[in-house]
Length: 454
Image (tube, rainbow, N blue to C red):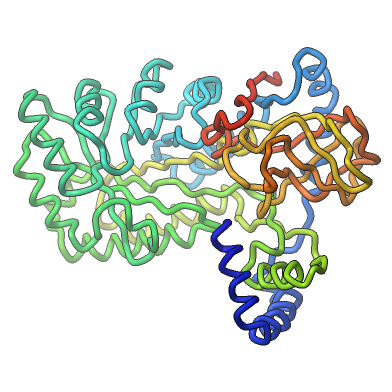
């Protein structure tokens, strides 16, 4: 983020005329390019969470802010919606919760109680799952060490290893030979649709060779294929990869080879529906406008406060994936399909409650929580509706809510749903359950505690 700001300022100084032209073009695009933008409003999030206001205020009487709120009701609702959607469209699927999105034991416990298995990316996550009684895992992630693979072999009755490279296959093969123990495995692939995600797995064009190499290690029971695509707004990315994978299998695998495939793991990537947004300057043209205005000591003006992050419903994800499987893969293979949801399940499970400590002026103040609680400068670009629980309103006030760290980018938002903003007010930051607690860090301040909202 810092580098991108510096680069933009260098462009501004180097060629102001070009930047002025870009500013004009960007303004037109931002105002008129309808397909690019998803204009909407997230007041329904505020209305919904205000139904929990009394219980949250009771929690605040017992515990000092800041703290996370584990919202059991929200987590359960997400789990039910996900399982119901896939039960309807792909009933034979098995679901593995991606622990990296939120590894808090109380979250993982509830996921397990709902019948999910676990997708882990490290020995640490595998050990956590074992300590909580999980009985089935897929172990993914790149660069698994000898220690990682040895732990997987030790728990081979519960673990399927998704291999990430030819070298990893060799390491696992040598270990199985050494211990004389077999283990079930899959292999992760990337395709032309994966872009920067080709850091993970092997190229699809090498898949047949990988299965051939695996025959050198008879105790590695290679019976599956995994691919992973993140940050999807619809089922289309899955459909493209499913079609490409099916075409490759049809061309390069015999019917005998295909009959040995036991699973295809579809990875994660389901975004939550209508629960978050982003500021105009997250778009390239908005960034140009913002940087140009700041360079000229002007306040940038945008027609919209924020745009709603686009994503289809979980039912549409499931329906789209199932239709592609039926069209392309089911005529070729008879196997089980795995999903690895993380963000969709964890997103609504945690909120952050913080107190307004200092009001520095009519339009900004400082709360007692710093963004170390979420691990990065998320709210510089991403929008969530801040809610003043002490003086709530369905209307937003222009009020910059800064965090309490010694950092200029430590902020929570530019607006707050409030009648007024006074010192001591309780501010709720909703839906901070995914990639927040897991990335929280002991920087200047401790990581806040987690309390259960029953």
